[in-house]
Image (cartoon, rainbow, N blue to C red; front, side, top):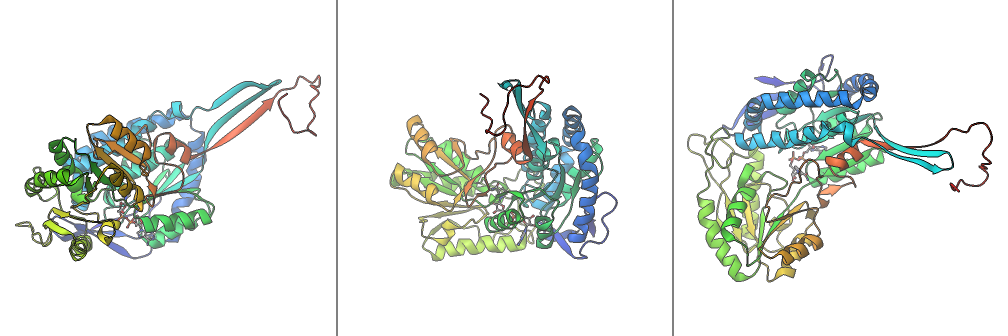
Length: 498
Ligand code: NAD
């Protein structure tokens, strides 16, 4: 059995002695085991990080950027291998896995510009003979705790910005698909990063708690489900750390009567069922406005859904692959049953799906549920599977209220040809990221990512200038160089700069 070890300089030692199994979701077999770490193991990693970080912070930003440039080259050279490894543990198809790597790489590209984005502000002559400047300094050692569904992208969102800004970084990836994060750390070392700068510790709650309680970790970035995000936020901030914690989602796609329905169906098929619906920016709820729009949309959705091709993750023709674990498959199917019991109409039923030749794989067929209402538990909660729910809205205001009042506020989309409606929707909806005729509005790397309400705890978003803000603190310096002649200043009175 293949063993996935921590990536800690100087050897990982034993850790907790516990392990976690890594499935191959396409075959339903256990393909590897990952060692789970404990507080003692984290301490060892922290010793390495503490040794290396001051020197890294003192390395000029141009030299730090060169490591990022080299890392980018190595990722590109290893793209196929990374995507295949990712896909074999996660279950998403290989082309989608490449997208996972690519969207992380784009943050590395942004981090290549660190000398430019880290430049401070300077005011000459802020008072008589006085200049003021502010600079951004690294926090020290940061940690990232990441979910299973983007094992390449989300770690790179975090450590790309943190390390470029001068921090050392401890990554605690999901124990369900930990191999790609380790591979990224190996490539980072190969790119010229000093030993101990980026280390990977595996684990579950025991390791997460050790991170949250470690006195030398200055900041924690988390992405995962909402209850755990809230726990991370509470415990981390109680320990006086800076914390950003992004949670679950239930993104809605509002379809106005004037929308191009063929385009909408095409967009929805990918956004609801791509990656088997295991994306925080998936679109699992569609909100057609008006009965006529709902009926027309439903008629077009059914054949599109029936035409979806499900396959093993390395099948180049598959639209989507298996879900991540047998427990997750069971949970998704339970949600479909819950929706049925609550009065939803199961129009296309993906329960009990089996792929010929891969009967043990964790496949769930695409599912369409109509007449879903806001009172239903299956609407309120995240299903995180290939399940699309139709919630019929009477008019624009009703459609606007649905995502605005939902507990999650990650992403939302509106499909329309009416600029006024789109503009009104984007400005009023109570959700963090909005797509206008764009089904998956994940902002590009030089903007920032972050949801609202129970999709995001903390005030600072991921990557872009927000990421820079999260991983640095500003120092404000006020200076004067008196010439010895006395300038009449009097600190008994609070300085007012004249
Ligand atoms: P998860 O919450 O189960 O796990 C996330 C991380 O938390 C993992 O590293 C895991 O080891 C750790 N963890 C698990 N249980 C814990 C516990 N009891 N205490 C402390 N730590 C614990 O999430 P997941 O299933 O890996 O990922 C899917 C979830 O992540 C979905 O809810 C999805 O919407 C969300 N997600 C959100 C975003 C976003 O940006 N908002 C992006 C991707 C995924």
